[in-house]
Length: 233
Image 1 (tube, rainbow, N blue to C red):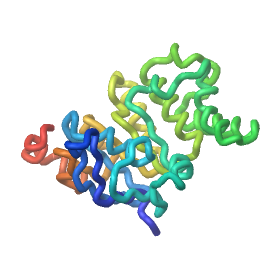
Image 2 (image 1 turned 90 degrees about the horizontal axis):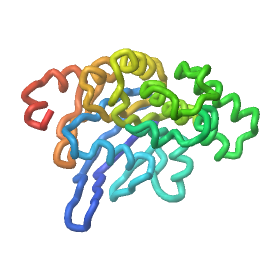
Image 3 (image 1 turned 90 degrees about the vertical axis):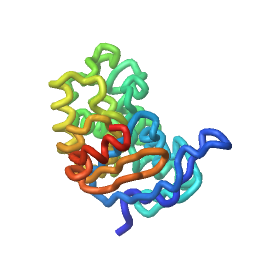
Image 4 (image 1 turned 60 degrees about the vertical axis):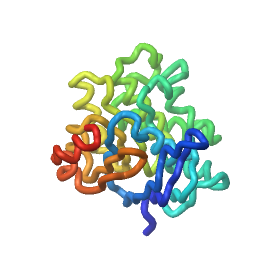
């Protein structure tokens, strides 16, 4: 069986004279939940954006055996759901229902199927009663859940999450961690929340200087104080 995510010798430049990524290589198996950690500016978000084609560098990226290129881009974006750090970037419709329905409607699915997708996604994140509310009136934790629902309605097999617990109070954070723990999808979670990574993920990738500098069991990497200090954590 092909890996859920395979990256080999990925290079990405923000400018012609300065490579941002240098030979980034790793793979993630189906069902794995993996943390992506590193100091600010090391490229965690940029790496996530590479995995569903928002940004495209040089090298090989495969999603479930399918090479990421222009021909396969739409298919891969259906497989890979990206949840942004700021939920307002994904919530732009008059109601939560419309935001969650946006992706399935874009796929030209029938009204019945769209409604089923929306109801299922909202149920997964425990947001059914907020379907007709305006996203503007939600709390930060509710916005995070609604943003995840907009991705789940596309029924992806892989979730990429950028700082999912950022800006949440303790109660909302606990609730979100429980949700992520329960969801069955393969996950790559970019985060500074090392405690959350310890609770959810079995494996951690540590980035520094545009490279993966450590790849191993979450407990071993995140409890290695010398390693974390050396790389800015």
